Image 1: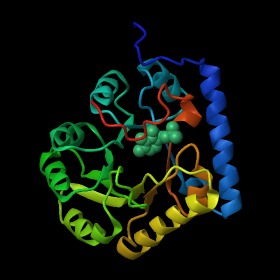
Image 2: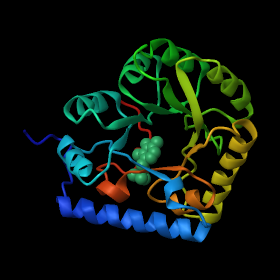
Image 3: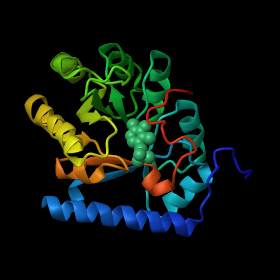
Length: 245
Ligand SMILES: *Cc1c(COP(=O)(O)O)cnc(C)c1O
């Protein structure tokens, strides 16, 4: 297989093994501090820009789900990698992407509009179980970010609940990037309060990335989305939810 242009920073398999061990110990320490069980937190490796070869290595180390932001890149990986892998779409969802997402993914974390929800449900193939979805909340109400404003949440929750081929699993956020732990915790705590209020029966809080996973775990995250801490720095480190493909 020819190396792809995605393999810009290609550490060895050992390196990936090492990084995974480091991430695991961070999760365990955060769980201990928060008096939570490790089993209650799922690790979603975020594999945008990472080559198929490295994902194969990751899969061989036991990672069996990946989060992807760019549709075309993801579809190519899905086609090449084992069918047992569970794929999560975490990038912005425009109308022209809904069919491919409905047909190829198990999860979509970035649902923030009723129109997109309806399309995903209509386009989910009959032979597949309902698509697991999280509603993305723009928790710090940043103009540049995707996600629904907290005030509009109840209406969207209601819409999604009534769609047959979507299973509303919880909420997701991509908070303000900050090194301030207090501020990180404040955003994540608001997420938990919104979940407790509007979705008490849905377990998932998809929140926490490489830089803020400890704060997320402290505040109740159940699914952390980890990219650079596992796969190393990406060529452009400022591309969370960058929109292309
Ligand atoms: C890239 C990305 C991540 C992972 O970010 P890291 O800081 O590399 O861990 C998580 N969530 C979303 C939505 C992303 O776009």
